[in-house]
Length: 202
View 1 (cartoon, rainbow, N blue to C red):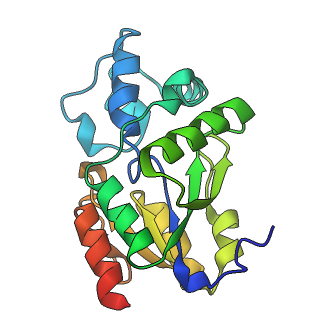
View 2 (view 1 turned 90 degrees about the horizontal axis):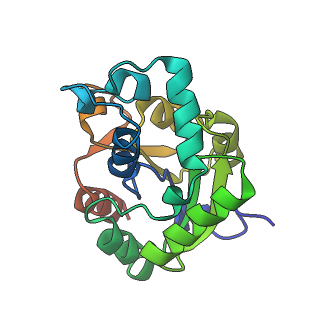
């Protein structure tokens, strides 16, 4: 299937965890049930092993994969405001969405992710591409090189990877990325901000 057969300017590329779905809240509860405590300043960090006490990098990767392949991944709540403004981008401005998420290669886990997205947001996604847990997105973003598609992320490195391919990155603010500044990466504090940025550029 040619995912760019329609006008690329009507496609928005979008990350899932931290942008569409609230992965952190459910993962934190899942880790707490296993006896792991968050650090006091956990919200300041993106990497899991930096957010929990007595957890090294290898163990954090293992737990992230287990969680991402568990039934819990199919029942994440939406990021605040995302349902309303995403649907508005769809029905008012005609956008369709391609999700690029570093979740898991497990087919059943991927099905849970797609079901979760469709249940929360409706039939607005033309592509939900699930990469391996923690994978970089550079290679997939290269498929959209030069299209000028919007690319919505919360991880600065991924925003810059999109910028390198000629995309238009928007970084959704979280505590872990609040100090990142780049002249060509647009900052949005809320989903309403994201909508306004895209609307004003039309």
